[in-house]
Image 1 (cartoon, helix red, strand yellow):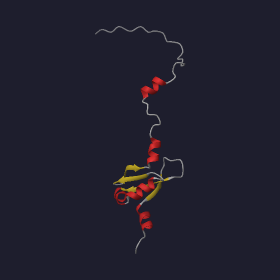
Image 2 (cartoon, rainbow, N blue to C red; image 1 turned 135 degrees about the vertical axis):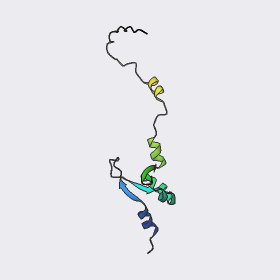
Image 3 (cartoon, rainbow, N blue to C red; image 1 turned 60 degrees about the vertical axis):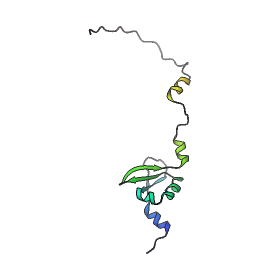
Image 4 (tube, rainbow, N blue to C red; image 1 turned 180 degrees about the horizontal axis):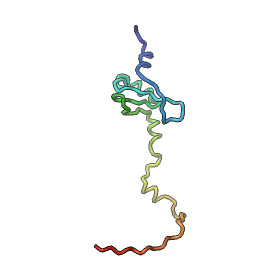
Length: 108
């Protein structure tokens, strides 16, 4: 019995629901040896949705499109210190200052 390429590929990849996505989208899961043998197909499918690759049955990597990856990167290249320095914090009011507490004496 001979299988055509489409049915052979369908038998190689299993599709399952991603529990972390709220939409009805599904992610494909490939075993490493399958992903290596069909890498161009993995890349093509990654343009539509993330492709998970497992090693010995455990999740290892996810192949995503360049566009998906770019959208995951931070929008601003500024670091935290730069963001804080440029933040409009002059108008913040913290309320009344507390009482100064005397320091206790400690013998050294």
